[in-house]
Image (cartoon, rainbow, N blue to C red; front, side, top):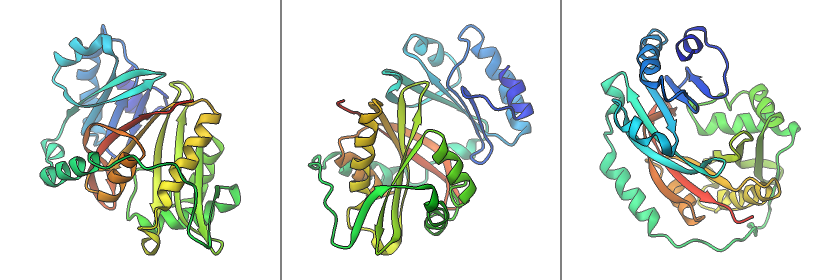
Length: 280
């Protein structure tokens, strides 16, 4: 089944073929056949120029996963509707395992973990406004993403794509200055697993350092509480001092690093896993 999905590029909510980032993600699998399926999947993946396969395993399968040629990258507490996902990957190209900035990234994590959690505040500097995104914002939102990122794991620089995800299960909040969108973030809800990824964080360069994303994240958390989605995680660029510190100050805990996981700004980057369980 897995092999056919990759070969035919079929859509499946539990088996994600991510061509942009040259990876396959398995959220569900038959543990009795996982080893055989992975062998077949590797052959199909190489034909599609895929060089990373990631399995989101459940606790009862840890022994199985440890016995396979997989590398544990981290965990996401609460991912499966309150149950932890254990993330294991296999790399089909050794160049994808290289972490040239590993030591620098370790220092960023350590410094972020030393930060105290900030008190909740939605106050903004004068002239700024925090609100929910509207469908009429999609063109300007796409322009912001295009300015901030040379490349991105999803086509957020395309208004049609932004409009599409906005109509599905993604919440967008943003900050404007003098009626111009200057900072954005989203909560991508997975209804099946009752979790949400805090993602698509973008602030125009000239507006950074004002704590705008901090306010947006609080705003998104309030919206998620209303929807009774308590299990949050964020995958932050491992070399981004600002984003790792921002999520740590919001009470997120570090739970691992996904190696060379996403194509951002023109090259693959490591992504740190940060997790928070909301009090609802």
